[in-house]
Image 1 (cartoon, one colour):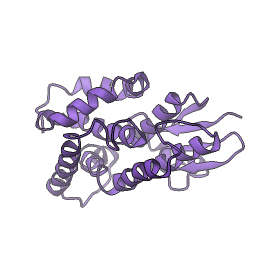
Image 2 (cartoon, rainbow, N blue to C red):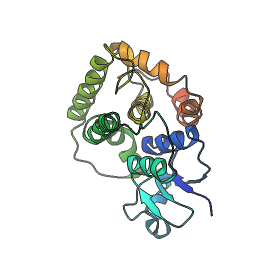
Image 3 (spheres, rainbow, N blue to C red):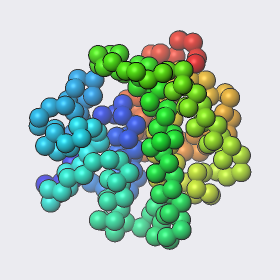
Image 4 (cartoon, rainbow, N blue to C red):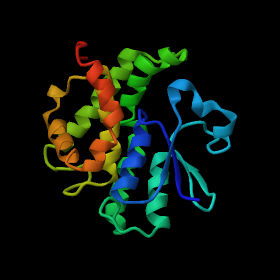
Length: 220
């Protein structure tokens, strides 16, 4: 049995894992779990990921794992992969971990805004999230990154790492709400550097097809 990766291409963490696996050339099989159809809530999928979220993996020996950052680090360690995306050097990897831990309560604020603005209503999910406050938190996260990119090319320094790929997938989601990035020139420059990686582009094909359809809407 090959490594199975359970994802939804419209899910930021899903795209992150798929992109990393493709960059590292790790053989795997994609199994689509479409959130909009509620596939993540089925009893069958709950046996794979009891948290009922994507992404998740089932390795060739039957080992199951959820959470995007945990998955990619497991893949790198279990396959003994040497990669600048997550170096062996303890200080370099620690700085990457620092961002990845921050990501959940920082940059992920972007998805909280997007989810409650667009996804929750379509899924019939009631939310008590204050959208204006969520938007303010999203802006704050973007300003932090834009300031960082004034003095360095990537989140952790001179080289692209897992931190950049995770953040990029998150920020790209804002195209779904036609976000105005002109206020963040350093982020735009960083994004143009990240998109030079072909696997990043292919991993966003589904998202970008949808974005094309909503370009006519006013920017936020």
